Length: 213
Image (cartoon, rainbow, N blue to C red; front, top):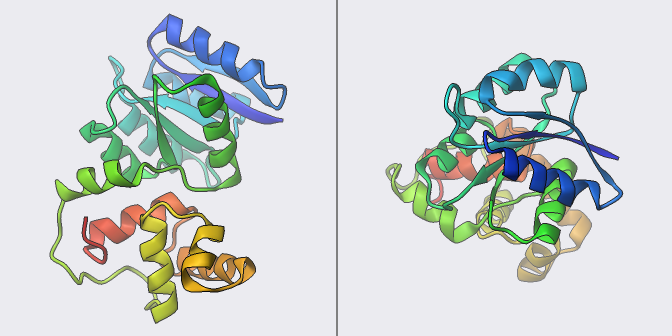
């Protein structure tokens, strides 16, 4: 079972999300919070695998709550940001702060459940076009250097395709490589960049100017 903490200041949205996730059989809602200031205490007590985090809340917003959560734990839960608009400025900042992906509140129930599963596995959950638009507002000069050890040419190719939203299988097809080889390259990219998932690798690539939106 994947343990989920729902954070949203709207009672109806929390109830709807709980109903959607509970109906799956493999996702367990272990708690709810109505504001970002409740996130860390709840996470300490409940140890969720994934936090569904609203962006806009009255006291502490999802951006700050994400930062607090990632600062508190050596191995923090994955954060899946909930937003009404995919071009919300807060979304990009939350991703930059360490969130593993974002999800539109109007998404269909099966999409919400699958998004939680993807994030729990450490897979990417990005809308490439939306992320490119958001990254454009934070444009850095082209050719910027990534943090950490230098990527090989192949690793750089893999990172660029990750930024397009391609899966390992799709990257393998594009580069005519085996899927296991691609997995190895992805792991190496994450290790060199010092990030824990594909989403953070892509955001780092945009923020550095290594990839241009």
